[in-house]
Image (cartoon, rainbow, N blue to C red):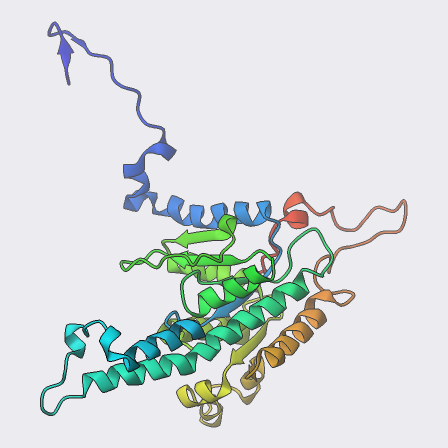
Length: 331
């Protein structure tokens, strides 16, 4: 401790406020506050933007728009314009896979898979155009993605092209994933904790569309299927698995039922679709039946008393009126 004249301590600087102490907030002791922040801060933004519920799109981050994929294949065909291959794709030695052939194979596959980007873009546009016609003070069935490139970008792009709000739930990773430019700026999120990101995917979603993808897509799809299977979400959710040819080669879900790993009835938790129109019809039917018909959706479960009578339930709070419609968890 510094002393003045050897007796009186010098005045101390004011201590930082606890919520401004970055060292504490970044420490293990501050973890609970960080977790709470990833719940409360999105909640505040969803309320401010009047988001009631969402339709979530999952799919590969690696698929490009058709024009981009076609251009890359065209470059391969014009050898004078191709940049040198990276070291792991340099010309093969004896007994190794031919690297130029591998690059061409990947470029051709990218053109093939680009149709899923375009289909996701079309479906998101259809969903948003329809949702914009629905009455109410809150935005319904807002297209939501993981906020990155590929199918995520396609979904946000289609909703943006339709003139609607669209959500991106990004995740902070060692290899940074930039948010795509089509997300509504006020609804551009970045999470540290995977489980908080998954919470916001699951508990606002009234429908899910799963486009072809890899490990991340499989993880997200099966997590929501498991929540639905185990009835942990106290709401019906419409699940569309898009691209039956792709998914039936990747997964044999009928085998799971045949071997007793799942119930045959579990195969009814989802439906396959192969065109945007087919997927949109499934989504529109499920959402209308579960949330828009009389007695469903916003206002369902409210007690309406006759004139002058005392209602059986208290009036809805501001959160219930204007905030997001977060599904309850069954005990």
